[in-house]
Structure formats: C-alpha cells, structure tokens
Amino acid sequence: MGANLMKLKLGVNEVPEVEEGETTYTVGKKLEETYGIFSMFSNYRKDFIANALAEDAADGIAALIKGDTVDVGKVFAKSSENITDKLHEFITQQQVEEVASRYGEYGIPTQAALQGKTLRTVNGRNIKKPKKGQKFKEYYGARRPSFMYSGLFEHSLKAWVE
Image 1 (cartoon, rainbow, N blue to C red):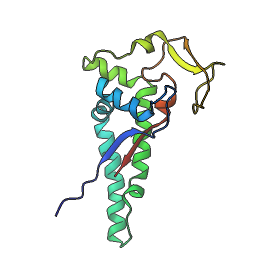
Image 2: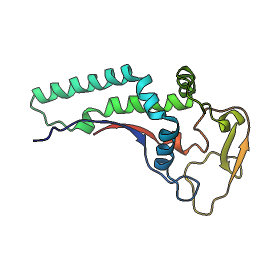
Image 3: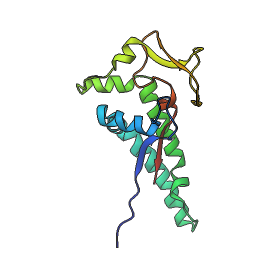
Image 4: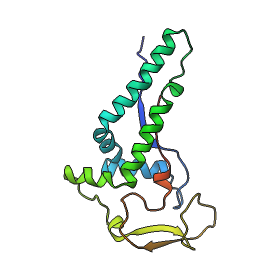
C-alpha cells in the first residue's frame, strides 16, 4: 500500500507566450533550470510556507474531526493564495535578486533587467494575452526587476497543493 503524499507545487498557469511555441510553463522550466528561482523562493520563504500550510492543515483536521468531507485543494486554498502572493512579490519586488546576491548566484539580476528591456505591444502597452498576428516591440527604459520581460510570466505565477 503506497502512501498518499501531499505536495506543494510552485509554477505557473500555462498560457502562450509571445514567442512562437513558448508558454509560461516552458519559460518557468527554463528559469528554474538556469537560475533556480522556484527553489530559491521555497528556501527563502520556507518558514512562511510551513506556517501557512500548517494553519490550513489544522483547519482541515478540525473539519475531519467534526465528520466533514475534506477536499485537499479547498483546505489549502488560503495558504496557496498567500504563497502565490509571496511568490509574485519575490519576483516583482526584486527579492529574488537580493537572495541570489547573498548566495553568490550569477546572472541575477539579468542583463535584460539592468538594461530595462521589456516586450510590449507596438503601441507600448503591457501584454495581457498575445493574439495571433499581434506585433510586439522591445523597449528599453529604467532598470526593472529580473524575469519581468513581457509581463505574462509573473502574472501567471501560482502555488497549489495536490
């Protein structure tokens, strides 16, 4: 008899990226392989993650004791949302860069972030959802956080429990 393990997943809602054949999943996978951003986050925020999951677990156990049916996804919905918010902050508030510098990770901040390089629609707007045939243009401006090139990746970040 195998044990049923509960796992915290860190990743993205998969949506098409601007570049043909890319999705937020493939981008996230490359960023984890190259920079270890999800691993860095889980190490950096391990106490927060443990406490958030523990609170929801306690509520789930209380529901079981009362005889309620418990759905893991629903039990951990609040902690998943809170962890997602922290993951988003990790990227958008440049915490990933602070953590990387502490551990001597090279390549963070990224060269594109230092140059302020971003991908936007040709009229300069943020990309909400790429459309077939839509044109995009790279812009250079003020220094920006790493891993926020088109806006799609950071908006698709997600934590969930299975």
